[in-house]
Image 1 (cartoon, rainbow, N blue to C red):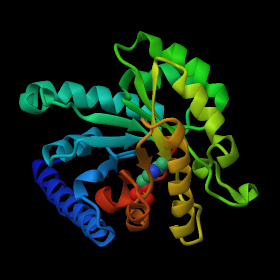
Image 2: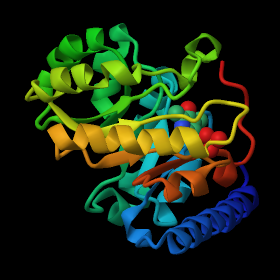
Image 3: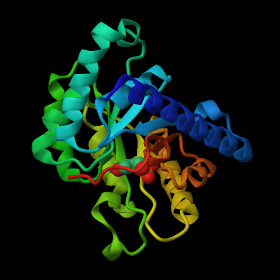
Image 4: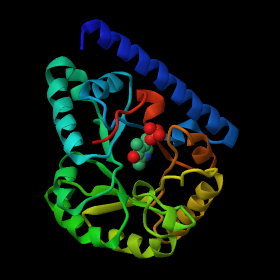
Length: 254
Ligand SMILES: *Cc1c(COP(=O)(O)O)cnc(C)c1O
C-alpha cells in the first residue's frame, strides 16, 4: 500500500469507527444503559494486519478473528510491527485483547490459544477437556464464552450460527467452570438469519440470567453485529462484535 492509500484507509476506518461508537452510545441511551457497559470488538477477519494496527492507533482495545491460520500470522505481524513503529502501543496496558469468534476445531486449539485471550465460541462438551489441556501452558486461564443456538428450528441453522442447545447450556457451563484453566465469562450468540433479532436476543438474555444464577461470574453477553447491534444492546449485550460496518465488505473467506 502506498503512503497515501494508508492515510486514506486510516481516515475511512476512523470515520466508520466513530459512526459505530455513536450507534452504541445512542442504543445505550435509548435503553437507559451506560455506554461504558458495552465493549466494542472490531472483527478484523480477512483484513490485513495494517488495519489492526490502524485500529489500535484509533483506540480500539478488542479485535475478533475467526480463522486460525490467518489470525495466528496476523497476531505475529501486529506484534512485530508494533515494537519498532509504535513502542507506546506495544507497551499499552491492557494490551490489545484478541477474541477468537470462530468455530473451534480440536486440532487447532493449541494454535488458537497461542494468541487468543478470549474464546467466544465454545459450543460443545467434547471441546472442554482438550481445551483445558491446551490451556495448561498459559500463565493464566483463558476466558471462555459459551455459544448458544438461538434458531428455534435447528434444522435450518447454518454452522456459523450454531451453538449449544439451550437445554444443554447448564451442563456445558458446569464442565467449563470445573476447569481451573478456563474462566467462564458468559454467553455468545449469533442471531438467526432472516428474522427479527429481537426475540432471539430476548431469549439469550433469559438464558444469561439463568446461567448467572448458578455462575455469578458469567456476566458477559456477546451479541450483536453490524446489522443488529442496537437490538443486542436493548437486550443486555455487554460485548458487540462488529466487522463490516467498520472495515467494509469482507473478501470471501477461503
Ligand atoms: C464475522 C463475524 C462477526 C462480524 O459480522 P459483521 O456482520 O461483519 O459485523 C461477528 N461475529 C461473528 C461470530 C463473526 O463470525
